[in-house]
Image (cartoon, rainbow, N blue to C red; front, side, top):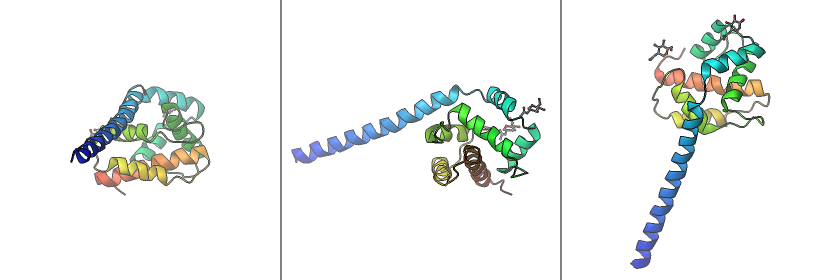
Length: 153
Ligand SMILES: *[C@@H]1O[C@H](CO)[C@@H](O)[C@H](O)[C@H]1NC(C)=O
Ligand SMILES: *[C@@H]1O[C@H](CO)[C@@H](O)[C@H](O)[C@H]1NC(C)=O
């Protein structure tokens, strides 16, 4: 009985440690997200990959570019993801940060299953080109978000 109790306590302890580790990594992501100044990033990225506002508005409201061959605009999206820390210089994603940003952008929205949605968009990335990869991710996130908010087209 004593051994059993000790086992339960140990298991609970492990669970508590696991939960603490998860919330620690999410609060790191929350802190990183709080430092991101999106309007500034838009301005910076526009200096290198000049993209009309209308092109971006279309993208953010449809989850795809009007012209899918517009590579420069895909690089603009990569620039945003890169400067915000969502994608690193090896093309790896910061999944926790992407979760926070997806919830926040463009407005704070609570979508059921948002974490699973982000994980599946990340897992689906087969692109090796960085601009295509960032574009593929953000397209997937926007499309899924719109569908879940009931604005799919
Ligand atoms: C990028 O710069 C161009 C030229 O200065 C401007 O017309 C355009 O609106 C800017 N795009 C964004 C997203 O701010
Ligand atoms: C979301 O943000 C946009 C632009 O900032 C605003 O026009 C819109 O009303 C907001 N939507 C909601 C649901 O808050």
